[in-house]
Length: 179
Image (tube, rainbow, N blue to C red; front, side, top):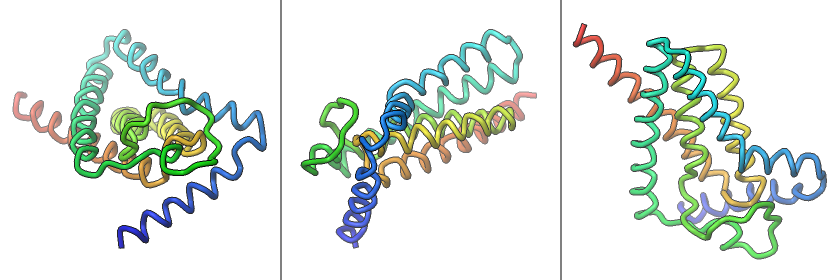
């Protein structure tokens, strides 16, 4: 069963990768999302924090806590389910960005992008929808540039979403008890 899933994942990756380097604009756009778009989340955090609204600061703190917990879980998963990156396990792929040959599974970029986007969505729906779209672009771009398989980013998105909800529930419970 695991071999079948890996084969399907590899086939989907190869299908996507066939379109790389056919449109220069699209390639550069994907490089931007894969390498630089996550800094938009940091800029957002700074703006929310400087706004000094209690709700905004709570959102930032919750997202940071959820990301830390998610990264910890990603490290543990990576120890038990090490998976090579596509550019290591497949020769002759179109790789648009350099990356170290460390564990591919699950994607830290997808995890953090979805953790932050879902957390933001729980506090500010309209802005959260925009950043959820950004998280989707970041995640897909990691496949496009050749550094992740689809399941790497899918699991990262699921874990990020779960941690956002877990942290939201914990913080709401703590603040409810302290009122």
